[in-house]
Amino acid sequence: MAKTGTHARQRWPLAVLGVFAATGFLFVAASVSAGGADLRPAGGDLASLLQERAHRVDERRADARSLRVDIDGLSASVPGAELDVFRTRVKQLEEPTGLTAVTGPGVRVTLTDAPRTVDAPGINPNLLVVHQQDIQAFVNALWAGGAEAVTLQGQRLITTTGIKCVGNTVVLDGVPYSPPYVIEAIGDTAGMESALVTSYDTVTYADYAAKYELGLEIETVGQIKAEAYAGEVSLDHATATSG
Image 1 (tube, helix red, strand yellow):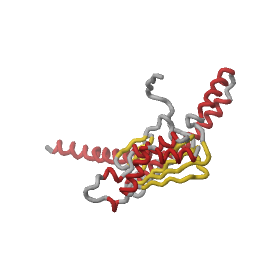
Image 2 (spheres, rainbow, N blue to C red):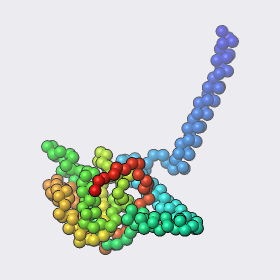
Image 3 (tube, rainbow, N blue to C red):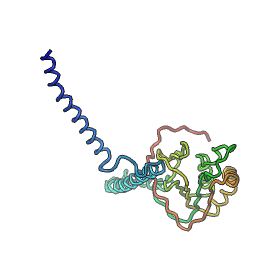
Image 4 (cartoon, rainbow, N blue to C red):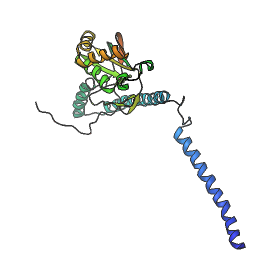
Protein backbone atom coordinates (compact mmCIF):
# COMPACT_ATOMS: atom_id res chain seq x y z
CA MET A 1 0.00 0.00 0.00
CA ALA A 2 2.82 2.36 0.87
CA LYS A 3 4.38 1.70 -2.51
CA THR A 4 1.15 2.56 -4.29
CA GLY A 5 0.91 5.84 -2.38
CA THR A 6 4.46 6.72 -3.35
CA HIS A 7 3.65 6.24 -7.04
CA ALA A 8 0.54 8.41 -6.64
CA ARG A 9 2.59 11.22 -5.07
CA GLN A 10 5.12 10.93 -7.90
CA ARG A 11 2.39 11.28 -10.52
CA TRP A 12 0.88 14.37 -8.83
CA PRO A 13 3.68 16.83 -9.87
CA LEU A 14 3.41 15.54 -13.42
CA ALA A 15 -0.33 16.29 -13.43
CA VAL A 16 0.27 19.80 -12.08
CA LEU A 17 2.94 20.37 -14.71
CA GLY A 18 0.48 19.27 -17.40
CA VAL A 19 -2.17 21.74 -16.18
CA PHE A 20 0.32 24.63 -16.17
CA ALA A 21 1.53 23.69 -19.66
CA ALA A 22 -2.04 23.61 -21.02
CA THR A 23 -2.85 26.94 -19.36
CA GLY A 24 0.26 28.52 -20.81
CA PHE A 25 -0.66 27.24 -24.28
CA LEU A 26 -4.12 28.80 -24.00
CA PHE A 27 -2.66 32.18 -23.03
CA VAL A 28 -0.22 32.09 -25.95
CA ALA A 29 -2.98 31.06 -28.38
CA ALA A 30 -5.23 33.87 -27.17
CA SER A 31 -2.41 36.38 -27.54
CA VAL A 32 -1.69 35.27 -31.11
CA SER A 33 -5.40 35.32 -32.05
CA ALA A 34 -5.90 38.78 -30.62
CA GLY A 35 -2.78 40.16 -32.26
CA GLY A 36 -1.98 42.10 -29.10
CA ALA A 37 -5.53 43.49 -28.82
CA ASP A 38 -8.42 42.66 -26.51
CA LEU A 39 -10.41 39.65 -27.71
CA ARG A 40 -13.58 41.18 -26.32
CA PRO A 41 -15.22 43.86 -28.51
CA ALA A 42 -15.21 47.39 -27.17
CA GLY A 43 -18.50 48.41 -25.65
CA GLY A 44 -19.73 44.82 -25.25
CA ASP A 45 -23.06 45.43 -27.03
CA LEU A 46 -24.24 44.23 -30.43
CA ALA A 47 -24.00 47.68 -32.07
CA SER A 48 -20.37 48.07 -30.97
CA LEU A 49 -19.57 44.57 -32.17
CA LEU A 50 -21.07 45.29 -35.60
CA GLN A 51 -19.19 48.60 -35.86
CA GLU A 52 -15.90 46.92 -34.94
CA ARG A 53 -16.48 44.11 -37.43
CA ALA A 54 -17.37 46.56 -40.21
CA HIS A 55 -14.32 48.70 -39.40
CA ARG A 56 -12.00 45.69 -39.63
CA VAL A 57 -13.54 44.65 -42.94
CA ASP A 58 -13.10 48.20 -44.27
CA GLU A 59 -9.41 48.04 -43.36
CA ARG A 60 -9.00 44.68 -45.11
CA ARG A 61 -10.80 46.00 -48.20
CA ALA A 62 -8.49 49.01 -48.29
CA ASP A 63 -5.53 46.62 -48.15
CA ALA A 64 -7.08 44.57 -50.96
CA ARG A 65 -7.45 47.68 -53.14
CA SER A 66 -3.82 48.59 -52.52
CA LEU A 67 -2.67 45.07 -53.38
CA ARG A 68 -4.77 45.11 -56.53
CA VAL A 69 -3.01 48.30 -57.65
CA ASP A 70 0.35 46.63 -57.02
CA ILE A 71 -0.71 43.55 -58.98
CA ASP A 72 -1.90 45.68 -61.88
CA GLY A 73 1.42 47.51 -61.89
CA LEU A 74 3.39 44.28 -61.95
CA SER A 75 1.17 42.82 -64.67
CA ALA A 76 1.62 45.91 -66.84
CA SER A 77 5.40 45.52 -66.65
CA VAL A 78 5.30 42.10 -68.34
CA PRO A 79 5.89 42.50 -72.11
CA GLY A 80 3.93 40.71 -74.79
CA ALA A 81 1.56 41.63 -77.62
CA GLU A 82 -0.99 38.98 -76.66
CA LEU A 83 -0.97 40.13 -73.05
CA ASP A 84 -1.54 43.71 -74.19
CA VAL A 85 -4.76 42.63 -75.90
CA PHE A 86 -6.03 41.02 -72.70
CA ARG A 87 -4.97 44.03 -70.62
CA THR A 88 -6.93 46.36 -72.88
CA ARG A 89 -10.00 44.16 -72.64
CA VAL A 90 -9.76 43.92 -68.85
CA LYS A 91 -9.29 47.69 -68.57
CA GLN A 92 -12.45 48.27 -70.58
CA LEU A 93 -14.42 45.98 -68.24
CA GLU A 94 -13.15 47.43 -64.95
CA GLU A 95 -15.43 50.48 -64.87
CA PRO A 96 -18.74 48.79 -65.80
CA THR A 97 -18.05 45.96 -63.34
CA GLY A 98 -17.34 48.33 -60.44
CA LEU A 99 -13.58 47.76 -60.13
CA THR A 100 -12.70 51.47 -60.39
CA ALA A 101 -13.57 54.33 -58.07
CA VAL A 102 -16.21 56.78 -59.30
CA THR A 103 -16.82 60.36 -58.15
CA GLY A 104 -19.66 62.68 -59.06
CA PRO A 105 -23.06 64.14 -58.16
CA GLY A 106 -25.70 61.74 -56.97
CA VAL A 107 -28.51 60.79 -54.62
CA ARG A 108 -28.35 59.62 -51.01
CA VAL A 109 -31.14 57.53 -49.46
CA THR A 110 -31.21 56.87 -45.72
CA LEU A 111 -33.49 54.19 -44.27
CA THR A 112 -33.99 53.69 -40.52
CA ASP A 113 -36.12 51.55 -38.24
CA ALA A 114 -39.09 53.09 -36.47
CA PRO A 115 -38.41 54.44 -32.95
CA ARG A 116 -39.14 52.12 -30.02
CA THR A 117 -42.01 54.36 -28.93
CA VAL A 118 -44.04 53.13 -31.93
CA ASP A 119 -43.85 49.52 -30.72
CA ALA A 120 -47.33 49.06 -29.31
CA PRO A 121 -49.62 46.05 -28.78
CA GLY A 122 -51.32 44.93 -31.97
CA ILE A 123 -48.62 46.20 -34.33
CA ASN A 124 -46.66 43.59 -36.25
CA PRO A 125 -43.01 44.25 -35.27
CA ASN A 126 -41.91 43.35 -38.81
CA LEU A 127 -43.58 46.55 -40.00
CA LEU A 128 -41.29 48.65 -37.81
CA VAL A 129 -37.91 47.62 -39.21
CA VAL A 130 -36.10 47.98 -42.52
CA HIS A 131 -35.83 44.69 -44.39
CA GLN A 132 -33.60 43.42 -47.18
CA GLN A 133 -36.38 43.83 -49.73
CA ASP A 134 -36.78 47.50 -48.75
CA ILE A 135 -33.10 48.20 -49.36
CA GLN A 136 -33.18 46.20 -52.59
CA ALA A 137 -36.21 48.18 -53.79
CA PHE A 138 -34.35 51.49 -53.51
CA VAL A 139 -31.18 50.05 -55.01
CA ASN A 140 -33.12 48.68 -58.00
CA ALA A 141 -34.92 51.98 -58.49
CA LEU A 142 -31.63 53.87 -58.49
CA TRP A 143 -30.17 51.50 -61.08
CA ALA A 144 -33.31 51.89 -63.20
CA GLY A 145 -33.07 55.67 -62.89
CA GLY A 146 -29.59 55.79 -64.42
CA ALA A 147 -27.16 55.14 -61.58
CA GLU A 148 -23.59 54.52 -62.69
CA ALA A 149 -22.34 53.35 -59.28
CA VAL A 150 -24.18 52.43 -56.07
CA THR A 151 -22.92 51.88 -52.54
CA LEU A 152 -24.57 50.57 -49.36
CA GLN A 153 -22.96 51.51 -46.05
CA GLY A 154 -20.05 52.78 -48.12
CA GLN A 155 -19.50 49.42 -49.81
CA ARG A 156 -19.67 49.21 -53.60
CA LEU A 157 -22.47 47.07 -55.01
CA ILE A 158 -21.92 44.96 -58.13
CA THR A 159 -24.07 42.41 -59.95
CA THR A 160 -22.97 39.55 -57.68
CA THR A 161 -23.38 41.40 -54.38
CA GLY A 162 -25.70 39.64 -51.96
CA ILE A 163 -27.84 41.59 -49.46
CA LYS A 164 -29.41 39.43 -46.76
CA CYS A 165 -31.64 40.20 -43.79
CA VAL A 166 -30.58 38.48 -40.54
CA GLY A 167 -32.68 39.49 -37.56
CA ASN A 168 -32.61 43.27 -37.24
CA THR A 169 -29.36 43.58 -39.21
CA VAL A 170 -28.45 43.40 -42.88
CA VAL A 171 -25.55 41.26 -44.06
CA LEU A 172 -23.63 42.57 -47.06
CA ASP A 173 -21.03 40.22 -48.54
CA GLY A 174 -20.89 38.36 -45.23
CA VAL A 175 -20.53 41.49 -43.06
CA PRO A 176 -23.43 42.51 -40.75
CA TYR A 177 -24.53 46.15 -40.61
CA SER A 178 -27.06 47.81 -38.34
CA PRO A 179 -29.33 50.75 -39.28
CA PRO A 180 -29.42 53.48 -40.40
CA TYR A 181 -28.83 52.10 -43.91
CA VAL A 182 -27.27 54.62 -46.26
CA ILE A 183 -27.51 54.06 -50.02
CA GLU A 184 -25.56 56.40 -52.31
CA ALA A 185 -25.76 56.45 -56.08
CA ILE A 186 -23.78 58.43 -58.65
CA GLY A 187 -25.31 59.32 -61.98
CA ASP A 188 -28.29 61.14 -63.46
CA THR A 189 -29.78 62.73 -60.33
CA ALA A 190 -33.03 63.79 -62.02
CA GLY A 191 -33.59 60.33 -63.47
CA MET A 192 -32.83 58.60 -60.16
CA GLU A 193 -35.11 60.90 -58.16
CA SER A 194 -37.90 60.32 -60.66
CA ALA A 195 -37.44 56.55 -60.39
CA LEU A 196 -37.60 56.69 -56.60
CA VAL A 197 -40.98 58.42 -56.57
CA THR A 198 -42.51 56.26 -59.30
CA SER A 199 -41.30 52.77 -58.37
CA TYR A 200 -44.13 50.72 -56.85
CA ASP A 201 -41.88 49.22 -54.17
CA THR A 202 -40.30 52.49 -53.05
CA VAL A 203 -43.68 54.24 -52.99
CA THR A 204 -45.06 51.39 -50.87
CA TYR A 205 -42.18 51.79 -48.43
CA ALA A 206 -42.84 55.54 -48.29
CA ASP A 207 -46.46 54.84 -47.36
CA TYR A 208 -45.38 52.49 -44.55
CA ALA A 209 -42.77 55.03 -43.44
CA ALA A 210 -45.46 57.68 -43.04
CA LYS A 211 -47.77 55.31 -41.18
CA TYR A 212 -45.28 53.60 -38.85
CA GLU A 213 -42.62 56.34 -38.56
CA LEU A 214 -39.94 54.45 -40.45
CA GLY A 215 -37.06 56.66 -41.46
CA LEU A 216 -36.85 57.75 -45.10
CA GLU A 217 -34.65 60.59 -46.30
CA ILE A 218 -33.80 61.29 -49.93
CA GLU A 219 -31.35 64.06 -50.77
CA THR A 220 -29.32 65.26 -53.73
CA VAL A 221 -25.58 65.38 -53.06
CA GLY A 222 -23.16 67.46 -55.09
CA GLN A 223 -20.20 65.11 -54.71
CA ILE A 224 -20.19 61.41 -53.85
CA LYS A 225 -17.30 58.97 -54.04
CA ALA A 226 -17.89 55.28 -54.64
CA GLU A 227 -14.77 53.26 -53.90
CA ALA A 228 -13.82 50.41 -56.20
CA TYR A 229 -15.24 47.01 -55.28
CA ALA A 230 -12.62 45.02 -53.36
CA GLY A 231 -14.35 41.67 -52.84
CA GLU A 232 -14.45 38.46 -54.82
CA VAL A 233 -15.49 38.84 -58.45
CA SER A 234 -15.44 35.19 -59.51
CA LEU A 235 -18.70 33.29 -59.96
CA ASP A 236 -19.39 29.94 -58.30
CA HIS A 237 -21.98 29.06 -60.91
CA ALA A 238 -24.01 30.67 -63.68
CA THR A 239 -27.15 29.85 -65.63
CA ALA A 240 -27.61 30.77 -69.29
CA THR A 241 -30.75 32.72 -70.18
CA SER A 242 -32.57 32.63 -73.48
CA GLY A 243 -33.03 35.66 -75.67
